[in-house]
Image 1 (cartoon, rainbow, N blue to C red):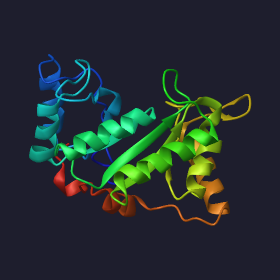
Image 2: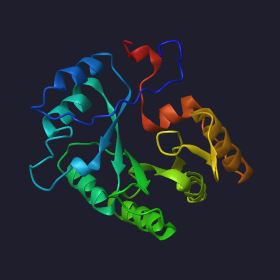
Image 3: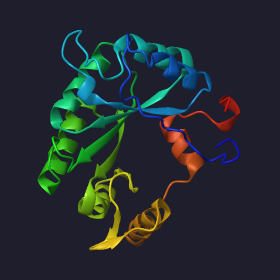
Image 4: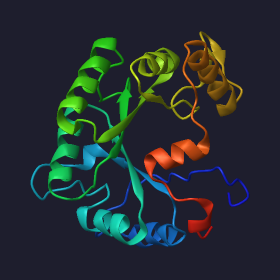
Length: 213
């Protein structure tokens, strides 16, 4: 990882809580001064209660303050946007935040264009200009949702974690093949793809000189 100087590491927080036994493992990773971490907003409950299988508020504040970790806030439904707004109001996160709008995952909001527009309007209302956003859609919806997100001014996530296919009935050979396809689509629409340095500056991530791995 160290030799790939454009890389932004994004470990996931699943299974970690303030009093959970894996907290020390996560903190050890943070000692390496990772740049960004996922945070699933399904963990954010009203008041002071937080799901016992996700990252808790004390640890979250520690990661933010002590290590400068930037979170990717994964929102699987509209309620997660309101939960994130609640946490911002409580001072758990400092805007601008990075929001990943997720569609087509069982238990979350469906992969319908109306839902994309609804989630985007809701985020605009809650966060104003104090957020960056990206779209993740599961399975066969990956490319068409990414294309719609680009046309709406958003960012795009693709990869084999979310879809195994490059086209109808055709398995993707690699993550790189999916990235190359969505890049071609975006550029043919007249948009420019950000460089790693530009993306890092936009999201406020650390450079390679500020990590220890």
